[in-house]
Length: 279
Image (tube, rainbow, N blue to C red):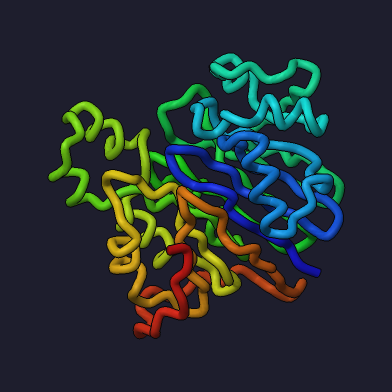
């Protein structure tokens, strides 16, 4: 038994994350066009007919840009909170709208999807845990700060998409106006590389096999900067950098019912980085 995951696109130009079992799948966000979603899933060998729902994290265009057409064409329910729906600039078909509430699991076949609140400058932003039997996958992007909710859920994941948006020095030295810099780093914007690393180092479980570093800024980050931070002690976790230009590979996440989330001791001696992908 396994769960298949892939980043279809990750960045301010559009976000879409695939999580599925052998029988059904969901998208977390649909920020690229329906046509591009179809192309990328076909390229990866993922059957779009297995999609059963789209869950929307928040109303920003790079997370909802393709959802209306995708829902109409494939008759997919769109799960949003009431506040997120009210803030959506791209109206989704009303007949396909479904509600979810924080911390209340939604069953999509044998998948369970649970949203939980996060800090971001949106109406009602949520991160997600997708569970299939004992395997848990997290989607944690567009996060202003690391809260206790995030720490708890991250520690239980077998795989996760985790924001690593900006390099602090590049942001400070860059050309963004000061008000935009404050938005990004001010607690309701995005996570820096170092903040993502600290969460990973201190709260990853030993069962975390794959980490897809996501939503890299085009102007305030580089793959090299992310590699520099994450080339320290990564243990047995497979590190991937998700691209803003193309999909990742499809990764198979496995585990056993005996898996128990065990937090890695951050005092453990350094090990070699296993692999970077996504360039």
